[in-house]
Length: 417
Ligand code: ASP
Ligand code: MG
Image (cartoon, rainbow, N blue to C red; front, side, top):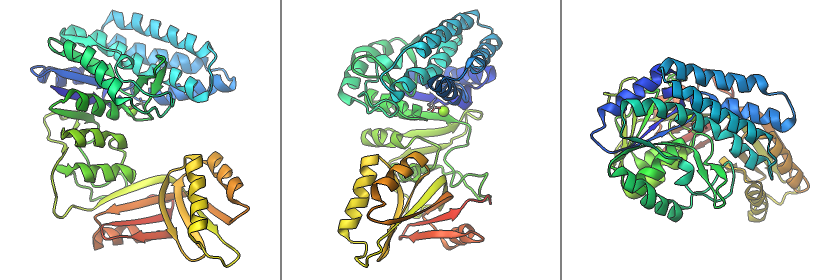
């Protein structure tokens, strides 16, 4: 059994959907679980619609755009039923938009999840005609989570029992199409796994089903040593270890969602990252290997803020001060991307978030002098060598630098190469 995940870019047009179905056709001898996310930039558009409705602005044009773009794909695929499904789903979305919710995050998930419902609705009408053994399963009936909306945590044992009770019997005779990213909590309310979380759905299903592999079909040749838009000597990795892949995602490589690797590594299931336009290409395989001397990878993390906390009374940055600072970060749920301390100052690099930054300052300004810079970039070189180090440090204004045996990191002012 194989799990395939197709992202928004791969199904952004009728041709994309046809290409996906042709890939599926080539593998239909295996039992397949196919996971699809929202079409193209639909999730961003839904975020706009949600924000407008939440703040009382008119979103009717955006809603029409959402409806039309999906109907267009349905028409181009030539399946009449797609239009009916879209009409129904848009009607449900309209109802969802008019309801009252407990809070922002809960409402967000009820609205944003419609991207995946629309995409799988259309795709299923077409797929069923081409490969009739496919059945549609709503991911919310399978992937169970807590009620931490927007970043729901998986209830692994409940999910496992849903998979055993529902998916395994279906897979005896059928293939399955389902959504990435969306799930549901104990009371049946829709939850989401965090932006770009469809890869993680792929990993949850592949690991719980004991699949032979998970393949993530992407608009890139595989995992690259750097973004080719930013560096000119990027190479594609043929294979890398789970550990290496997990670290790349931690430092900000966007090719796969950071939570994807762990469940697969725990079950020893290989992850293929392959180009959907060239399905015969080998792409990259992430599995249990040890590479003696890995090639340098360069990762850019944009929208960074560097904050420094200074003590002014000559007590130095001691354990007590550090404890106070880190405790506040934990309380505000702010992730630290890089930190460094000196005798009198402690510096932290985080993803820019003005609201949280102001809260943080409010909570600590009585104890420290606080300075910060926005509009920065964090550049990480994993497995650096002299050449990559020179390439990245040249002509950049470096605000902070840190180096270990394998990693080199700098926080710099934003600039394109
Ligand atoms: N559609 C969701 C998003 O854009 C999930 C995903 O694409 O993986 O974040
Ligand atoms: Mg996506």
